[in-house]
Amino acid sequence: MNENMVSHRWKPRKKRGKTFMIQAGLFLLGRALEAAAVLDKDARAEVAKWNDPMTIMLHVHSQGPTMVLKKENGILRYAGSTPVEADLTIFFKNLESAFLIFSGQMGSPQGSAEHRVSLKGDASQAMSLIRCMDIAQAYLFPKFIAKNVLKSVPPMTLKRAGIRAAILGVGVPVGLGKLARLVR
Amino acid sequence: MIPSYYEYYNPVKVVAGNKAVDNLPYELEQLGAKRPLVVTDQGVVGAGLMQIVADAFHGQEAVLAAVYEDTPPDSSVEVVNQVAKLYRKNKCDSIVGLGGGSAIDTAKAVNIVVTEDVDDLIKLMGAEVLKKELQPFIAIPTTAGTGSEVTLVAVVADTKRGIKMPFTSYHLLPKVAILDPRMTLTMPPKITAATGMDAMTHAVEAYTCIQKNPLSDAHATAAIALIRDNLLTAVEKGSNKAARFAMANASLLAGAAFSNAMVGVVHALAHGLGGVCHVPHGVANTIFLPFGMEFNLDKTGDLYGELLLPLAGEDVYFNTPKKDRPARAVEAVRDLNRRLNKACGLPITLKQAGVPLDKLEEAATAVLNDGAVTYNPKAVSYEDALSIVKAAYDWL
Image (tube, rainbow over all chains, first blue to last red):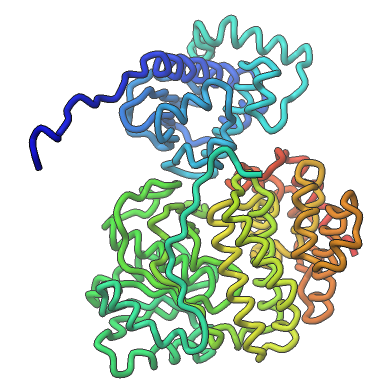
């Protein structure tokens, strides 16, 4: 082959905006899950059934944004964005697939149906995690987005509005898992 | 409507028809294999089907290197590890799954163990995590229902941990599926009916779940029409080769459909009930299919309306007003269930299947952790699952 025919100028464009948005979305979701596991009785019941200790990771293949959750001594906490060896890992196959999900354009069932994610670990525990993610997303998203990503949106009662305020006001910025540990 | 995005994969070579099993040695050689391990069960051996497979190797370079005859109805990690040892000890170079879903799923799981060389299968549990090309694998179904010969799924029980481990990977698809009418001729009427309704459930759910796509739709509707025309004949006249062969094809088509479109609430209910009360999978699907359809009617009624054509035929379809077609489709399934019940005693209520009334809550709880719920068009809560299970208990 003529060496002049080999082009070295084609480089993938960096997707800094989308990468940042996904990392931010993972942080929000992680902290919301941590808070929902304390404040929402359904999420609490789900998390109580998980192995203890247990490490969960959501990771964009292959070197993309990551979210790690750890359950220790019955408490779930957001454990940062450094990839680890986890008991249960949900992989987003690429950045664009993760963006569709974290920008509220698509829910996790549709993401699964379109093969945009893969799973390593126990499928029944993954189902429980997904139910918790649905609960957390119902608090995080306004109704017009939640309708796109969830199969059913629970009505916003006074109690749920209070939990939402606590998640957004304290859970996301501070981390309710930490507080739960201090209270113990 | 075509989805905005979908994936479809079915690279399985289908070898189907008269004396098709005799092509097994040739197909193995085409894959560069000459020493297969056959994974089968005592029922298959007792029915003389293993002998038909053995006879195919007469005068061939390929030889049967080993045969495992003791696959239980619900395969386990222990069985898989035992068979993997047999594979290594006999220097096998390929695997043949001969039987129903359990034998073929066991063969798939053995293939994972001997290829990945793992000590504990649980390390590879998950969806789409296997990366290596597996050993040459050929499936020969002896029931017409699971469709396992063209699916990417294997389910194996971990008895120590008390869980069923699903493995989903495109690498699990067999290289070749062999459909030979001789292989299903001896199937008893009740098993023929239950496995046939399992295939029907695969097709109906594949057509209505959120992963549906134009290719899976084509397979699903073809399967339903074949089942409509042949299942009762196969049950009532088991020696009818044409009906048996049609059902084997229907099962394969429905398998290819659901392998690419997944299944929904009916399978989640059947898995839940199977885990708690050990009701055979095909029987549970038979019982829950009309109830699952009714549950989804408000979300996917139009799709059920479309299915009335393959379910009930042209006359019924064109003589039913469009708005009545969804409910009529449910009734067509219920009618088929009643006829099968009359023909061979196939249970069509949970009570007939011997399910204890006090187990319904436990079964409903198990439904929620089943992956099939994800693909159902409608969210399924514990209350929904319990309400369906109760309704299916004694509706006659």
